[in-house]
Image (cartoon, helix red, strand yellow):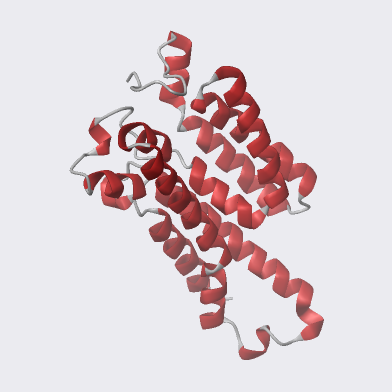
Length: 222
């Protein structure tokens, strides 16, 4: 496959992930979400600032960005660059599956980076939890299911959304390691998990200081 096909997949996924859903939802109500609550454009802050219905909508759209990037973008790019017999040669099924898997992983990384560092907001975006969930719903649904349980348990025990997200980010590489025999996916998952934790650095600082906002609170301390 030409290198251009890989670059277009990464760029297309980045642009899809870069759509700042929370920012746009708040802007429609005359609010700059970057200046209220935690200042984050993600679903948690959107839910707190704009209300649960809008926050849930932001969550779903952010997840859809990751899912769509993985499920459809690689197929679109491969349809443009692959030879006509790429889809029809039966004896090369394994190679075809591996190539699609590689493109899917590239798309997943691009979508998460697009959300976290959106070009539309001076490369300042969200934390990537919802978009990562959409990515792994497509790449490793069983591992994602395990992480959802980890998130829910941590959230119920602590009432901190950030603790649930960090716990899920820690659990994701382990869950993928034991449920998917894919070296590239395993390595990428470790990187994305570390990135998700890094993006929670201000939450970790607030947790240490005892100023992190618990679930159900009206405002989040900065």
